[in-house]
Length: 289
Image (cartoon, rainbow, N blue to C red; front, side, top):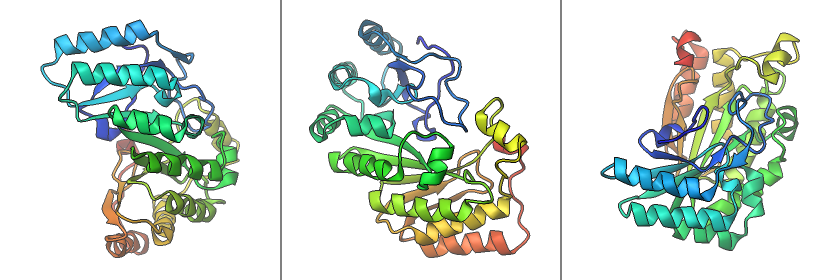
């Protein structure tokens, strides 16, 4: 298959066929992010995309999942996404789901009817990086949207029937804003009530604006125990229904998993153990594997 630059996908798309429909990220300003810095954003020509689908058809006996890359492929015009989804359906009738990275502004630009049409053509799940529910933090990390816009985007996707997977970043507010990050993020997630909620833990990437802020003392990182205290406050404040909760990414200091609210009591007890006792957290080196 033909790819340009580094390719990223959610952990749950590990066995998906990656179809690169756009190059890079149209926003690409977040202070913590080092992804797509080697690319200038553009949408790939439709003929190249369709040719890649034909090549995949020849190379693979069966494809049950497809992921549309790069950073926010939902930025494509709806008519182009419909064409791509139709071609995927025709080439791979066995395909159970197509996934996509989505940015809040891209979601808000599409009508409810457009999103429903994409759902009917096979778009089964969208991944939305909320990062934080705090307007203060969102402004500092240059996310480009407010917490209210995050809520509107998330609710719009939920109504469409497309399954929604949201990520937050533990520790992204540093030592001064950890409580605000937990409390305000819980408000945003509760208002959206997504199907999936994943917690990553902040990793300082080389060459990012955030790395420079840390070096200047403008942001102080949380310790593993402080991350767990922040996570506990978040989980305690969440008011969601049948939300699959995961904090088991390579970046996390210790894996957590459950479904909320059913497993809230157990998760809080696990976090209390980590906060109040000596605990063997994942070493920093291994968080990068």
